[in-house]
Amino acid sequence: MKKLLSMIACLLMVVLLFTACATGNGDPSDTKGTEKGTDPAQPSEKEVEAPVTITYCNFNSSGGNEETLQKMVEAFQNDHPNIKVEVETIGYNDYFTQMQTRVAGGTAPDCYELNIENFAAYANKGLLAEIVDADVSSLNETALNAFKVDGKQFGLPESFSNVILIYNKDLFDRAGIVYPTDEWTQDDVQAAAAAIRALGDDIFGIWQPITYNELFKVVAQYGGSLLNEDKTAFTINSPENIKAAQALVDRVLVSNVQPTEVQAGGMGDWDMFMSGRLGMIPTGIWAFNTFTENCDFAWDIVVEPGSTKKATHFFSNCVVMNPKTEHPEAVTAWLTWLTSSTASADIRLEAGWDLPALKNMDDLKAYLDITPPDNREAVFKSLDYLVMPPVIEDYAMMSDIIGEKLAAAVSGDITVEEALNQAQSECEAKITLK
Image (cartoon, rainbow, N blue to C red):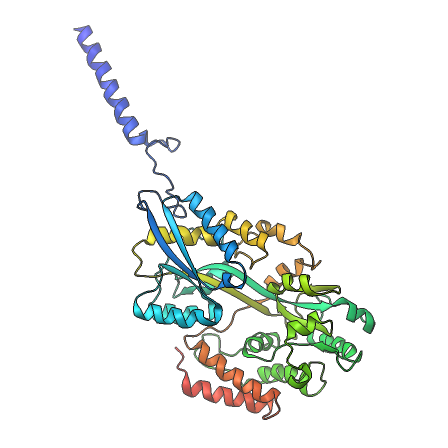
């Protein structure tokens, strides 16, 4: 009898051991029953059927970074051998027209790139899928929030760029004036621009394009905005905005520290700066490589000066998902890796492309070691003063109206106040806000 009980006990032990192995025994350290990649950022092989091919369309690599994007794709596919990414690159000037046609015709890719200006229109029209399973913990909060609508994430920030003040150190030396500092205001900029303008008839102090994209930032520097806080009313012709626009126009028509169209002689602002005839230019960090290759003089950067406060541009492109894609898990895996992985960030930084929109600035330390400019810290200091464009569904119409009126003001056809009054009236008549 004892022998029989002993045999039964042994049999029970075998059954229990077999069951424990099959179920992982509930021990977090036991991985036998854990599928690969249960982290939402790394979908499991079960979730992503093998093999899967997804299509990705973009414009941002068309400026010479096609090879960089391809390196990213290859690195991703090494980590996700069951997912193949087919890339299509379209030039910026044609991209949004083509994408609009393809989305309307039902031939849009599985995922694609959008700039911040067009994102709201796509999201509000229900053309984008909500991204729900991506691990966004490493991404910059400002950039993430830019691509939310009603609290839902419809895009992931792929990259960001901002604007700093770039200055010609040689011209500052010739004019006998100190280099710009973080404490400078627009008054300091004007004084330095006037001193540099005095160096010669063909030398100018500053060139800040008088366009919509500059205006929304400059009015913020003067304490203004183009919309009220909840985006229910236009405030284009506010006293603060008129003062800001007047300062820009006066540089051309009054002090002439900025060239007129005739004085520019067909040159653009970058071309004039690289020729050594321009003291300062507020422009994007994407200019660094071009200026390094083409400027035969010393130059550096500083946080862009403000007026009553500092404010500088924040540009960000996002990647989005087609709600009609047949492979949402694979798309999510690709978009998450592209935007937030350190491997993707390293490839982007090595190429000197736009900065990845990462939360931890330590991940971008390698960027600081590249010179010129020597003061690359100013890029990150500028992040404390970011101002987003006032994105609305009819963003393009609003920017076109304001841009047209500004052009009339800088040509002297109408006053600055008339320009902003007209822009206010036209926007109110043609655009319905929420």
